[in-house]
Image (cartoon, rainbow, N blue to C red; front, side):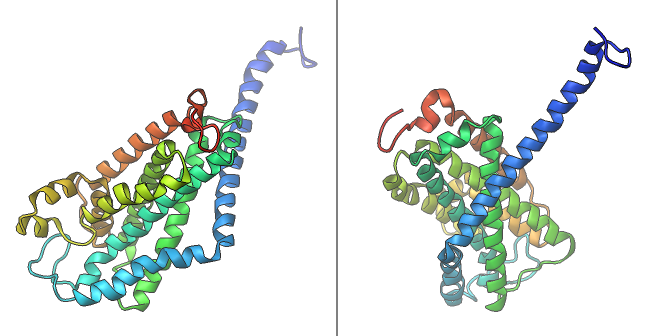
Length: 296
């Protein structure tokens, strides 16, 4: 059997059909990404107090807590700083990390809610790879985190805490912020697999968010922990992926080499996202929950 031009139809099929499938599949995937991101942005804009509540916590730390310790930091000059700096400048990258951390964990709360309402089951039955659908949720969460970080940096500048945002340092800091946002969003995605009910989210706050934040370099440098004799906190902070996320942002702002921090952040992102994809397996009950309060 031949086409009108005399070519065998099998040859034409082999050359055209895969191309159509590839183009259609890519278009469908991008359409799903756009739809999920737009949904999250719409929800964010509808919740008018969400941005304000996201900024209140770090701004209070910057305006109140840091004010009392403004001149405490500066006992020694350490990387990435070339001179003594006030305490509010030191904790600013840590507060950026706070914004990313809390929004990433809040995304896990939203995922649990969507799962209980059946929206996650509907989403994951779409004719697209499960990992891509979860990546779309991840990208939407990271985008919202970055929007909140930009708002916080602007408020911090109004309060007198100006960060060195110029040239290559700005681009590097942006890359570090996006990577840290993706890492923490993937952690939130992984936690949503194991949080069975909305009521259990308070436990997540107590056993994940606070230890991860306070046992890091967000509020004090590692050498301070070691110098003060808090050896076990120092060791935990060294292995805390949140520490490396904050340090990557801090070093990027000052144009210094972040060392192993990018590799730790990207490695944690890959591990958490892989485990989350495995957890949201349709054969395992979409995260182990088929209905509110019920087992898989």
